[in-house]
Figure (cartoon, rainbow, N blue to C red):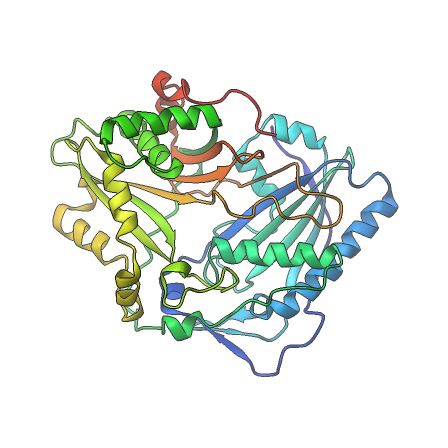
Length: 423
């Protein structure tokens, strides 16, 4: 459905306590390699604002608590420098936008259109912006609300995003036992000279790509895992490994790519490396503390799951040592393109947010009934998220429009998609 939104107010929220004057947050080498788009999520809460007084109370609570949260996450209230090497922690603050949405919250949840969800966010996902975070409070006609949150990927990964939201929500609930984030990633991954480095992510024509959400219930995921367990005759694959292989196989069918001679396929998984550093880092470590697991396949490769598992296992402590010494995790992809040519490579990237604290955003009126993404605008990408009950997986997939029509009507794929609502 087409969302009709009206901006009611737009203000800047600053940290409750001032940050030390002249403080700068240094970006790490991994931050330098990360694109500048916004990590984002929209949290939905039903029957929250029954009166105008409720709207004011909730708005004030969110602004006051995020102001306190920015005291802990002070770089988010700063501005990134032109050279993108530092954040000036100058307390300029973050936008807090309040919007009225001219429909019922249930209308959105029952007729999900990922691109329309972007209207519930404070920024364009790929806008070039020195501002590192933003909040949008969306109030529906029914009194339900949606809180859209954006945090720049340039300064932090998905776990950093959830760490910020979790702390903000805890403050809103009145909790005082909080875990302060650690901003020392640049000491582990010192910045490098990346003057010749070009970001790999390129936006596609919005009209030519589409994002759709496919829900795989617990039973369907189990069937897929069993299928790949039988094929590999090895260790039982994880949910993410099996579903990645399953979607990849149907994706290249939709592309008609498997029949092309000389075609090379790559599957990239983003891997959290906090636990692979010696000593391991806590989840509260803020920054882009992840790397890439690259699986390279030819059209004749039959055991996709084994390739995925091996590439993820290869992102180990020894690999992390290479990263700390300045190894660029995009080098292998660049080498493949130089050797085979871009047109001969069909890429597919997977980000898994499964097991992340997506539903811990309780600001004092309960956990969200659902939390979802928007349209990322980058094709050949899948984002996995747990369903509300935690058993199944939502796969948010972005493809070329024509390819999505084929992929979305693939009977072999749809046979494993749960037709039931996940909220």
